Length: 253
Image (cartoon, rainbow, N blue to C red):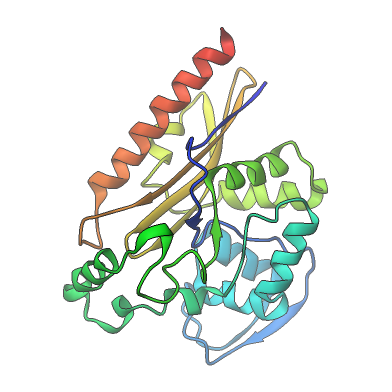
């Protein structure tokens, strides 16, 4: 039995970090002058498969940009459209997305970038800052993200690709948002997170020992000018869990 849990609204969101595409090959690429990897190398020859792991499991933006050089954002969007997911729009790489005021300020002043992000909102999902408006950033609605997860679990995609993506999501090291409310001895949690200034997202699937599986998508935007908000992340998990429990109760009648 499979259930789907997503926000009732069809609101389009910026989905920084949530969507990643598996490259099914074992080529090597030379990566230099891009900043540094999570593993600390400023210049290296890295297998594409390792770049995918760094991008998905560790949210490494440098690895993501190396992959986008192999498959540009427009090409990824075209592939998604061909797979029946035209609502997931990939418009740029990770480096372009994360080049915000927060990257230019000392850590102690990060809250100032968040204040600017909060003040810059406009009607209809627009924003005064580049990459924070729905017209020029990577976007998707919660339902579209949940549909993509269903494609990976059903799966509607080739099993080698879908299976590898599930493995990478299981290896995600960022587990402070929804994972505490979904991972247990009787269930398994796969997910991908995304963060950009006031945006905190996580999308994943929980599978229970009784055979039920639910897609859970939490796309949030904070009105608090602070980079670290553990209480907000804990609240994301609690609300998502309550919605999941209600859907599971209805599924069992």
